[in-house]
Amino acid sequence: MKKTYKVIVAYDGTNYQGWQLQQNGPTIVGTLQKTFTNVFKKEISIFGASRTDSGVHALGQVAVFTTTIPAPEKTIKNAWNNKLPGNISIQTIEEVKANFNPHHNVIEKTYEYTFTLTRPSPFVQRYQWHYGWPIDIQKLQRSLSFFIGEHDFRSFCTGDDHKSTIRTINNITLEQKESDTYTLIFKGPGFLRYMIRRLTGALLEVASRPNLPIDYLKKILATHNPEHTLPTAPSKGLVLVKIKYKDHS
Image (cartoon, rainbow, N blue to C red; front, side, top):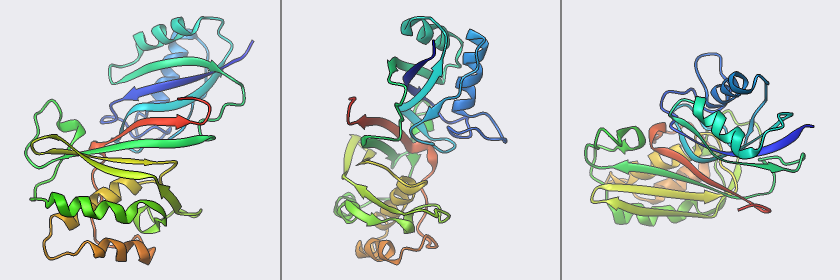
């Protein structure tokens, strides 16, 4: 009997070409599927909620797959994890209705971007952007409000998005983790490709340049044109933390 399972996956994306299958290197979903087949001698197709890019990490990626394996959920999880590389881990697995789609009924996705103003420890440098210029933290805080709410974020995506680029950001907050380490927390029902990284790069650029007013961000947003000179933050600082669904926590 075929069953449908929802899994929550955590991974260090440093050595992967993103979540989605690619021809040019290892991916998260490719590694998950190959390992499952090696363990259970059954092929599966895994469908994820967010196509995280090369180098992006996750604590709470949500995915779904179906299988006829008659094993308990705990057995599947443990056997799968035992053969996965150490940089990928199945956090939870639960049986769900056959029509569960990780793209549907999303209330909110939470992403975090961490940057540091001093050289980071070798033990955390894979997960932080070392930003090499002084930042006006108060200016950065004031800038966040420009992007909260519903806007056309075409200026802050890849530029090749053919569908609607209107998105809603529920909230953006800045937390100080250590003396010179900060995390930007983005919450909203969905984001465009590169959107958070482009917003982060733009925010830090304006906050580090005294001669650049924060209204410049509003101007760039209003142009609906991704061809501007504000930088894109590197993927290493970005983590998909959690996805909240209408019927699930």
